[in-house]
Image (cartoon, rainbow, N blue to C red; front, side, top):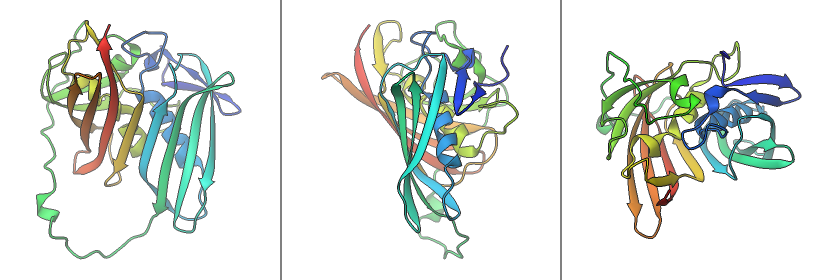
Length: 260
């Protein structure tokens, strides 16, 4: 059993392990691990000043195989206090996932107390026991994460609140950053809060956008998600993401909806 989602091969190439496999087809990856791997590349693209990623958008350009892949990254808009960085996951000569992130200069500020500070969203309850996976949820990714439901149910329709933790590091012998943990989970918003039966409908997100509200800390991230769909064949999954102390991000996924 591999001990990470990806195994480095050198020269920015990675072997995807079975932990990346998604629910639609085991030969292709869930969106969470590729998003986290690209977040790692974006964080590694060193700026000339201390930086925090404030927003990351991930475009899934095609199915991502569970295979050997390459990562490329670059700064596409340098700046003195704000810059835009980009990373791609490449299969052969074809980019399969592309991510862009706005980074802002990090600083310690003595901020005055804000009027809405007391109205910050409350952190959801953290359950004592993990939630077993239903047989209908396939894919290595689902079992490479530990899940604890605080609201809603597996494979049941409607909004859901679930805590998730990576059982394995993204790459061996490296502690995932808070942003990587958020990205590994954020792509599950449409799955945990589905409103259509999994065995009869497809609801696939070609993109994921995450706005960061605070630096995430700790192993556990909570995904509080809700999905709406329209009869014209698309939908939106919206989520709030928390660590054990506070709201750390908001996510959104556009959905392609259709019968299987």
